[in-house]
Length: 134
Image 1 (tube, rainbow, N blue to C red):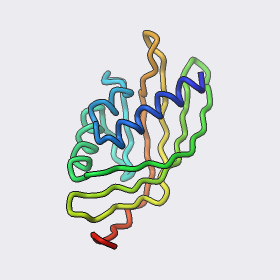
Image 2 (image 1 turned 180 degrees about the vertical axis):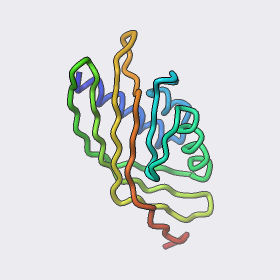
Image 3 (image 1 turned 180 degrees about the horizontal axis):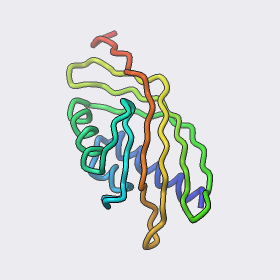
Image 4 (image 1 turned 90 degrees about the vertical axis):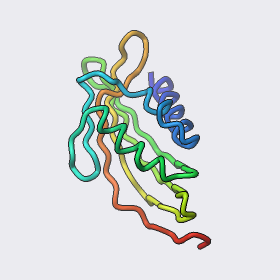
């Protein structure tokens, strides 16, 4: 089970790094049960989650993720995936946003043989913005 979930998240990362947000978000349930909590404390459904990320990804030419993870199986078949990561996002302006350390928690549920995230919560400080060419 842990290997399956690591593969799901590795695919999410690869798709994010390819700036293919539609494919990256295929790991999330588009059902009304999906809930996300943003780093600013806001709650949203799948559409808000997607829209917020799409706006940011539209400003990027590259997105690199370095990751550390922790998986725990919970009662009832849910799996908590705690994800600590670092991101370097290169913007179309040539500037870089560096998130030195961020964290996210997914709750995954297996339905129809496929793992889907039904909850996502992230915590991060605003990125360090590095000028172009620095």
